[in-house]
Length: 351
Image (cartoon, rainbow, N blue to C red):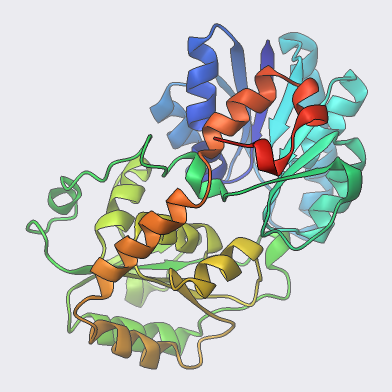
């Protein structure tokens, strides 16, 4: 089988990497396509995957329209050479359109429900895989599974934190440190959304500096006053950093959910809603604020809880046990497609 996977975000590399490695071991051919946005290319290089870089992504509205045509054409052009049997992505418009013209099925993961993207890829997509907690209903094309994307790569079967991260961060073993994540608000799903103000970011940094070391992961350029806090590690080390942090505060849903799975207390600050985030909030794995109001006060309260990290890890273990190994499920689903689509029910999903 020849599988073409499109990448639009660093998290997508993680979502598909263990699946891709296992399929390659079983003598399937896997090719990735990617736009050079943040550090997607570095992650693909680290995993030693075969990939094609379509170049820089476009940030402006006009650029995004041009990019839709350009990258869809490049995806179709790639298809003519690679000859995929199946397309796979996290809701890629480019993969979906190429699959339509190449007459092969496109299977999409979805967890954000960004209506602008869904409207473009859904007509050309045969199956949309979502969590049982996902709020939107996409009709007969949609299949639900018990879990979240982060369980495809942070499940204990695939990930064990490496405490060498303390040395890489310039810290002593078990020193307290905090990770802040700021997004650039340039993505289509960020339109109309908001998070922390500049003043609130300053207040958080001032507070956290009294309890440990502060590191910032930023999707865009940081204000000059924050440059000293920018985390300087390889992209592939970020999950070790999140796993060993005392607390995470950020505007990015992916990292917040990753912390929930890893057992790291997290405060997510964004107006964007997600079913998986709601579930994780309900069981106390993270705290969701729609804006920065009250965040500093909440962080103060959390820092006073001596059992904060122990309790977070216990809740994380229960969450993992209640859900599936998403990579194992995907391997079964693709290997048996399209019969797996016809025969699948949530109740018989034992992965």
